[in-house]
Length: 330
Image (cartoon, rainbow, N blue to C red; front, side, top):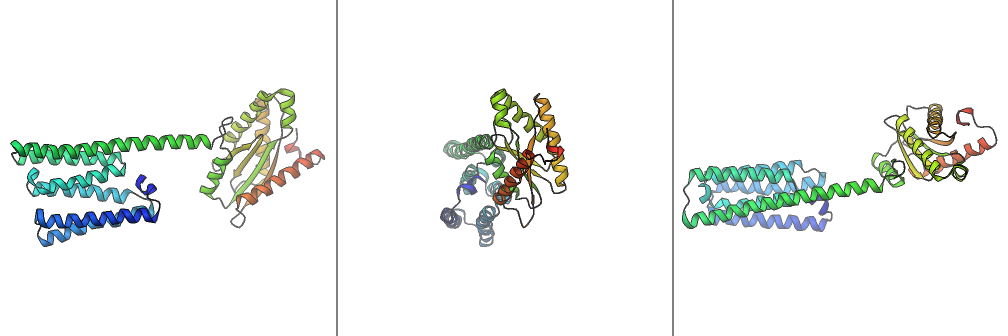
């Protein structure tokens, strides 16, 4: 999958496919000259190796690496069996194994490199029991096997390094999308979630704490931060599992609620969790909530957000005028 991500452009993939075709052609010529396969065996072998081009293309198209991984493992098994059937360490096919180990190294897959090491070790052990290698032959075969092993070891190191890098990237991505005061997703995290999930049924709600600026001025920013933390904890604790809450700035929160929750239930839920947050912070607080339904025809986030924002401010104005229902009052 790492290689698929790197080969993002058609030009890069074209170069990869071109190199693979050259590789198959060289092996074809080498198989005729050095190994002297019979034509039926050569035809099956070339078809088998050539199919790798399909699995590479299929893996990139579907962004799934399992079929290509299984193909490479089958190539390793074929290589080990072919070496043992054509003379063990004296087989010219011993040298072909290096191609497999290089591909394993480039895959950045620790599992694939470990499997390659097991196939190489088993083939070497059985070959040593089949043939007697002495003198210069021992030195030559030893150097070939050492190169095979070092290539696999390098691939394992690449795999470990890539996994650590992906771990660091994932860690910093989470950090970049998390509000550090409350632990909720921030605006970036919310937008990423919305783009991935693309909900088409439910409620989008915007809410903020009433008179929060006055609260900060009267009690201090530390108490204000405590209110936000308590609000975030109550949102996480009180909302259903399908819901999501985020802090997108100041005292402003945004929530997605499932479609099976009515508007009245949503307002009651927010009112109750707001009261609990105020009790935990030892401070009476209320919140304004603007809700808008999410449907398959009305699911553009920016439009929904603007409407929810307007509804929230209408509610604030209604509260100031004394017409807001008791569920959202002090």
